Image (cartoon, rainbow, N blue to C red; front, side, top):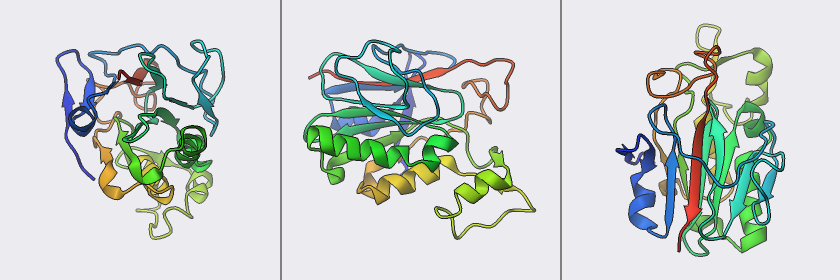
Amino acid sequence: MSSGFRLSADGVYRCEAFTEMFPWQTHGFGTRLGNPTADVTLRQIHSASVLNAHGLTDRSQEGDALITDEMHRSIGIRTADCVPILLVDSVHRAVAAIHAGWRGTAAGIAERTVHGLEHTFGTTPANLHAAIGPCIRSCCYEVGEDVAHRFAPIFSERKPVKGKHMLDLPEANRRQLQTAGLSPEHIYDCGRCTACETDLFFSYRRQPEEPGRMTAWICRSA
């Protein structure tokens, strides 16, 4: 579902649906203009590893997704083309932050995070809402035959365009979230491409000599 995302005065993108429906949380997707920090992040390794943030200190563990229901302690991930996804459990008030590169996506990190929320906090997937932030889009993300082959089961209807394999990584994650039980109406995608808009976002593929990172974070505040 397309939903409004707003660039706030502090230079951070925020999902308006999250802000309006869930006043008990705060969140944001960093940009070049504003890049908040999070209390707990991971040493990211492009995996499908999901960790409970309880008891963790910043960057003390390796992995690519964090879940928590703690209050006043933000969790976050860093991206520069990979897909940042934030999840909110509207009933149990658990939250998650996901770093989904192509390797993590191929390994099902979005689904694994949903299952982690289910098993740890009793989350029902139908009560989850997801915000997909700025990332590289299919307009700019050409991949090789080997990577395209990994995603063939997800995109069985798609064929190469003029011999090129253009990977739609956010759509792959959207489909995985739906497979895990999220309603399509609960998935909000900002639609912004990091590789197209390098004045606003860091893009490793477009500008590898300027390897900045943007933080996507979420915090339960009540």
